[in-house]
Image (tube, rainbow, N blue to C red; front, top):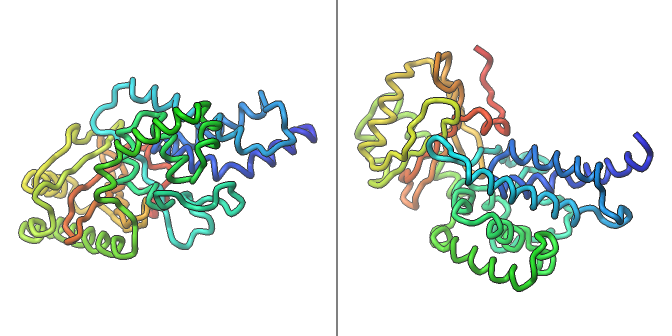
Length: 317
């Protein structure tokens, strides 16, 4: 490696965390974020910007955002079996630099309309799915990473006026989310932990009354099975959701191991399903909880490519 190339590699590595955070929020997929950051670095090495003596971040962000938008367009054209859910990432409080944070030397160290942790919450990532790739990019740069109109236009190759129009439309598309924002406060984390613990106890004991009291009338269950069998349509309503999970509990038997971790800002359940011939070996269950502590949604991610950013504590079987 030449001295110049080594210097470039160091400059690129210093931007990895910032780029990964952008790409994860853009795609909702940790594995895709890994690939996009790597592709950005490859392009930087093979076809670097004309002025390598200037800061690399604006050029790298431009490349990463273009690649992310292209990936989103391809994904929307490709059929997907069953519901598509974001991939979970761990967000522990004791990590030196969590995946959702901006490094201290960031050009935009302050938070925008949405808090950094909120912007990786499951509710927020799901809400972003209603946006076009360009709307998603503008909203993230303007309202999460606090870019100016000019910085956003430069990063996305858009005019200032186009950024403003796209931003307005993106915010309008987020209206439903904004009415009931998911900010992972300590209170919400505590309510979520209590609800999921009650859910697991009621499930294990097949306590119908306890489960009825815990689930909201219009509770929804969505499962992203990927390559594994899973419900291909949302299961809606308390009775149907209860029937689904009690049926799964009886089918899987006692060989299931579970632990609670903080995932995307809130407590979630990491599950080892034991040895199965056809089913997923592991999964993550994420819960949405209302102000009364009742579960309004259960999101189950089983697709193996969606689980590479979660460290399962279970021993190999």
